Image (tube, rainbow, N blue to C red; front, side, top):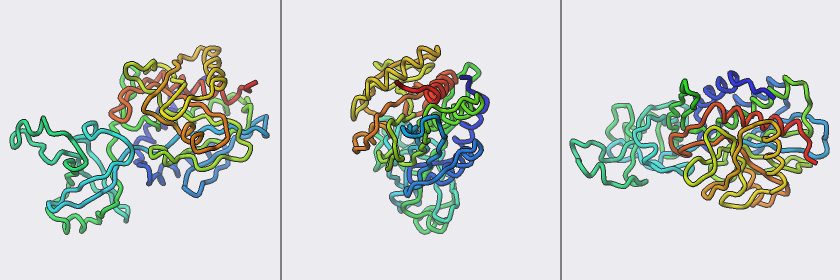
Length: 347
């Protein structure tokens, strides 16, 4: 089934421009809700604010759940330092070195956005020489330099900034002429974009889904509690999340990764084989892989005790939780596999 990649990439760019750190995903959930409604899918919210949209299928007794997460890595203000700079507390798991020198936004409780940059306390080579090169970057020596004339906590608080305010790092989204897509937070906004691409392909085809399918956009996956409920009669849960491209992984940037095992659990063999067979039958490039430091909404929901079969796939992504990169082909292939899954019954 053909995926409208012009639509997918246009939507992906828009989603990248909406800051959505775990804990403050209101704007991106509002935007994706409008997208579901544009396809005629009824929506509702969980008590935690996540978004559910339902597409009716031929089988309404055995419901499928397809999840992706809109939350990203980021930070909150931990301390306003005596010199007017900010110490942060991470949201999600990343290395400070991968975000060093990145521009960012501090969003106040009143909704004001204040620009700044992430730097080590000792950043100037001229002033600190080898100390800059040799110092390990930690929670204690990384700081935000605000783009405002501040030099004291009083100056900072006059801007409306306070401890607990969310910090959003710039994504730096770019698509190359050679077909690479690079940005922070492709995990998991690339999956959200191809999810809508698959919905569009199924709608355009006129083929009804094999099963009634609930699409679940979660907002706390990066902290391990994205899935808080399963719709009634849910029999299987497919999580859409990125594959990890790094030695010695089997994943590739130009293919779909179907996850066989992650750090929590193996995934069901029969479900995984069904997805692999679908990919092979439809000439969709794919790799089966295992990920050691990784968890998806599906595996975390399974560990939490939700009674549904579970699987996970998504585009292969290089440099995960850093400056990530995949290919247009991998995003397209992931959309093709999802569309094929939606319209195919599993015997």
